[in-house]
Image 1 (tube, helix red, strand yellow):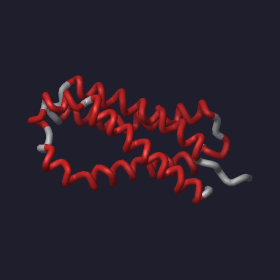
Image 2: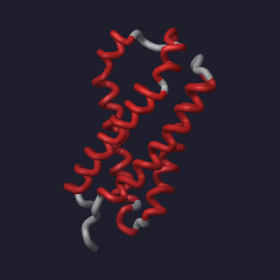
Image 3: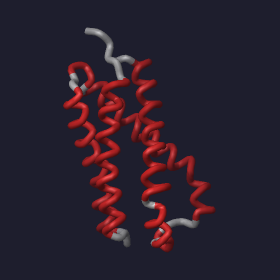
Image 4: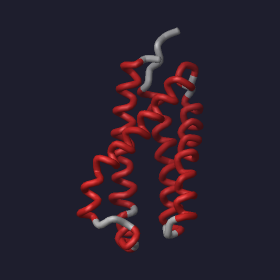
Length: 137
């Protein structure tokens, strides 16, 4: 494993997750969240939880990058990275199905979380393919 490349890949992955989460939740889903405000913490309270959100996003990005580096990167092709991303997206989004079953989420929120999460991970798979450089054999 190439530690320096892994650290760079983790940072790039985190930036991508942070940015795409902002687009997904802060822009695209903002009107849906406003219409279902009773399900969420007030915005003033939510700001105090930003470090927790960032920590979760960083942990997701780091896990994604480490699994790529140790399991796939050495002999990977672009098509492999896309399959990896979609598979990881399905894995991550299994929690959306569980949350939908146990929380009063609307079908629209659950569907948009699921679809955007899988697409986000597919993009992340492609990005880690291009950023992470394994050590030469």
